Image (cartoon, rainbow, N blue to C red):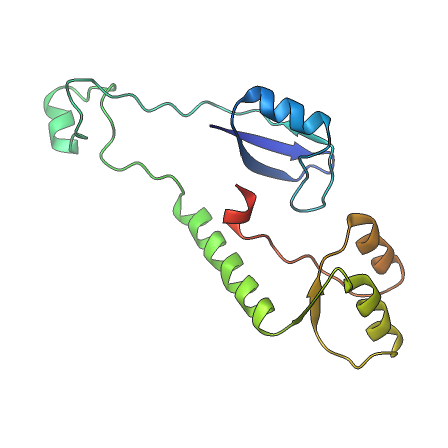
Length: 161
């Protein structure tokens, strides 16, 4: 598996996992990779620095800072604490999860009927209530152009992998 940093034609940056580099190329060419923010299928790889963590075969356990200092801070040993997500990103993920929970608790899911339901509520043809559902990018843009207030629900981090 390989994780790529990706960017859409609207400069939204995101990450996604693929079985190999060829899988990304194949899926992107077929329009199967889309931006989680704007749903654009025009995606390219962003510049990335490889993240490589090395270990000595004879030293399977991570060394403490004291042990590293004693042997000269051997750069081939695994660091004692490797953070996969820094505190800032962890807090952002927590906030996104809290927002999603609040949205899901206080809205009615209308599924694919979202554009029609949103228009009916906006026009006064249906009683006002907070709704959520699915809409294509084109449908969402049309609703916005018509003055209907819509916002995307942030995706759950696990949905992006």
